[in-house]
Image 1 (cartoon, one colour):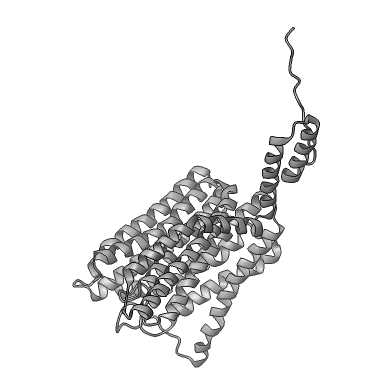
Image 2: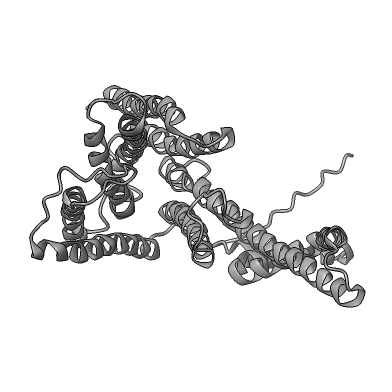
Length: 413
C-alpha cells in the first residue's frame, strides 16, 4: 500500500468512527430520561473514545507499517460501534417506534467489548513501540491472544440469558445448554486476563533492555497506563466502600461521582500517550510530565486530607466546647486558609523529596551547580576556577572528555 492510500484509508476509518458516534447522539437523546446535565455528561464521555481513531489515523498515516496505528483505529471503531448499537437497540426495543434488527444489534453489542478490550490490552502492549514482537519467543503469545479473543467473544455471544440493557429480552443466539459448556467461562476468562498480563510483562522486559529513544517511548505508555489504572482502582475501591450506588448514579455521594468521572476522563490518556511515543513528538518531555504528576498528585492528596481532616476536627471541637451541632462555615474557612498557607511550603518539600528519591542524578547535579554558583562569587583565582568548572561539568554532565578554552583579550597598541 502506498503512503497516500494508507493515509486515505486511515482517515476514512477515523471519519467512519465519527459518523457512527454522531448517529448515536440523537438515538441516545430520544431514549434517555436523564436531564440536560446527564445527557451532556454521557455524550462527553462517549466523545472521549474518538481520541482512539484520531490518534490511530495520525500514526497510520505517517507510519503505515506500524500496526499500532491500525490497532487504535480498530479499537476506536469498535468502541463507537458499541455505543451506537447500545442506543439503537434501546430505542428500537423500548422506544415509541420499533426499529429493524434491534435485538440483533443488542446481541452483537453483547460481545463487541471483548475484541475492543483485547486489542488494546494485548497487542498494543505486545507490539509497542515499533510494531514488532520483542523476539520470536513471544510469537506463541501473539497467536494465543488472538485465539483467546475469538473464543471469549464466541462464549459471551452464545451464552443464554437476558441481554444487557433490554429488560425481558433473552439472547436469541444462546446455545450453551450442555453442562460441560458452563465451565468454559471459568477457563477462558482467566486465560484472557493472563494474555493481557503477559503482554504488559513483555513491555516491562522490553523497557529493562532498552536505552535512549525506545526507553522514553515506553515511559510514555507506562505513565498513561499507570495513571488510568490508578484512577480506576481508586474509583472501584470507592464503589466497594459505597456499594449502594452504581457508577454515575444520581444518588451517589459527590466524592464518588468525582472519582468516577476522573477515571472516565483519564481513559484517552492511553491513546494520547501512544501517539506521543510513536510519533516521537516531545518525546523527552515525559520525565517532566512524570515529575509534575508525582508532585501535584501527592500535593492534591495531602491538601484534600488536610481539608477534610481540618473540617472534621474543627466541627468536633466546636461541638465539644460549645454544645452546638455544627459550625460548617467557620470550619470550611479555617481549613481553606490552612491550605492556602501550606500550599507553597508543601509543594517545595514534596518536590525536593521526589527529586531526591526518584531523580537522584538530577538532584545531585542541581546541588552541585548551586554550590558552584556560590563559589563563583567569591573565587578570584582563574586557574582555580578552571579546575572547579571542569570538575562541575564532569560531575553533572559526565562527558567522556572536557576541555576549557579561554580566549585571550587582544590589547590595542
